[in-house]
Length: 345
Image (cartoon, rainbow, N blue to C red; front, side, top):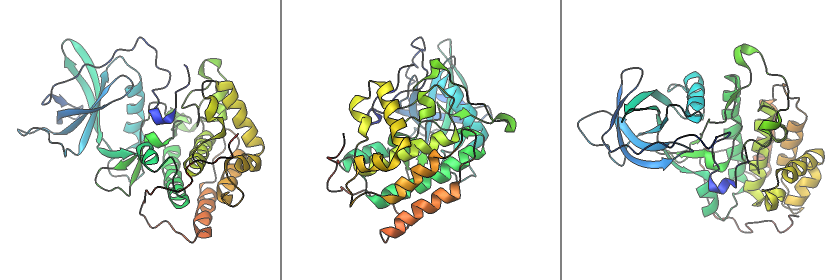
């Protein structure tokens, strides 16, 4: 598959062949019944995934679904793959009673319409995504906010990894603020999620040329560039690139995203000499030591190795302490002066 485009554009779904069918639009009031026999009423469409539509939804009643509906339903033709892959993850890991930074899964099923079958999934509704916030803030987040988001994502990734999955597509457009609490953030879109350790048996490192560069090109891991299946270390490498971009405004390889070999080789050089990479992205007075330490810790990991989540958390917490800040639970999105480093080459 060709690599996804700029994250600002939201990207697409991984490994999506052109022959997949688009979902037709259902009218408001359409009722879908999940496998648990619970009925859900659709409201207005509010978005579109790679090959499906996303609707506001609520538990079925005589009332129409309002603009304040607490749920959304993702719908795709049943013979499409991405939603099925996503469902497998949600059914294993995203339980309503768990506070994990994963969307809560409420139900799923098949729906017949006009002689066609559609697969659907019900999850919580969210507010805006962090890519929109990033653009509103002039394509730069404050250091405190970057470290807060990094800590939240570490917790979420550890939870996902403990449930035998890796996400493989961490980026601002896949981080959603809660609809009811703007201080809560959720990692969404598990269309690329991969079960790296089924039944406790880890997959071996193996490069597949057909999988090269899967993911969102500016953030995807070196393993993914080489065609290896996603890994825990890959998720953390991606998070590192995200944090650097959020703080400095641009990654050095963003000028040639249409050349995946260039991007891959740039990342390999970055991992070989993290200090030089940080000097490229930041001025000497602005360079965040904690992000350099984070990336150096991650690059030491073997493909199958369990990451030292507590150590990585301590590194980011030390970064907060160095700027006389702490994670107070509040996410503040302000415009930061000097939106893009002029030292990128």
